[in-house]
Structures are given as C-alpha cells and as structure tokens.
Picture (tube, rainbow, N blue to C red):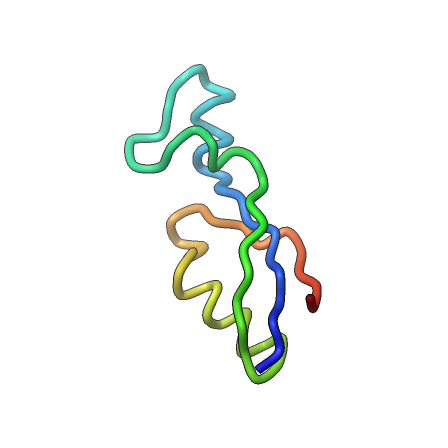
Length: 68
C-alpha cells in the first residue's frame, strides 16, 4: 500500500493559545503542524484513515498531503 504524509494541526488549540489559554484536552504542541504518515490504497483511502484518527469535529485540520 502506498504511504502518504499528512500535515495536521489542531485549530482549537491554536485558538486557545491565541486567547492566552491551553486547550482542555490536547497539548499545546498541536498548535504546530505534525507530519504523520498513513497508508492506503490511494490518497483518498489514506485521508479517510487520517480523518478517523484526527477528526475535524475535534478541531484537527489536514493542511497538506504528499505521497512518500
């Protein structure tokens, strides 16, 4: 299966830090982009896996993706 590298950060953490607070659940480091690899049959399959692990409903943003 091909491997894809996703650029992921958490917008809720960014907003909390801008307000001078910390997020109640996620560490401050999630304000920075994390580079996380997911495999999949294709990019869409890998994206579905990434979105399940890092859901937008919890503030996660996929800022980019590339095949590695």
